[in-house]
Length: 255
Ligand SMILES: [Zn+2]
Image (cartoon, rainbow, N blue to C red):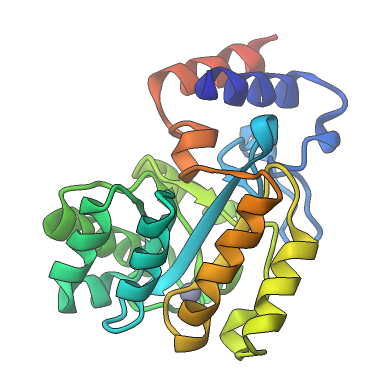
């Protein structure tokens, strides 16, 4: 069901002239360079998912962070909710047990680079290393191989898209940013998420600061009260490079 919905969006987006009405898929966003050939319709850059069933995805970046990630995990566990954690490879190497605890709790682990650089200004080789080392560190520590990658600061060029693609990594941005990294206060984090979220939202938080950890319980309660349902990224987008999705993309290109 989930995959089917993804394929529907993917196929419609690739075939249809109304491509721009599918905000979950990459297009000529003005922040990114225009592209040529098939990358112009690269379906593997996403900002949101299908909103069916009021689904949303909570994502936590920049961990694992001892003393913070545990609190976030406990708040999710209390409510039996699943999220996605975009981890920094060097921190996974430093705190492998904590990374494993996140995976063992049933959450999805994503790749957030090895050293958190501005990837858009790096050479292809450097970008490749950042992604590869992180894939390796996460697999070693957790047994999970990520299928989604999130560029630090969202700084990534469409013409770098072949690098994550070569590792079967989709590129996942976000649609709701409460700017928790600036420590605006718990109530600001909660209210920004509350007003910014709608079905299909991908919400960006950071398991890096105590304030975010302190806000997590209230954020989750509010969203639950608003009848949202929580899923991992792959839960509502499917795997970006699963054979079925690749086949759909190929068919769509041929028609
Ligand atoms: Zn980050």
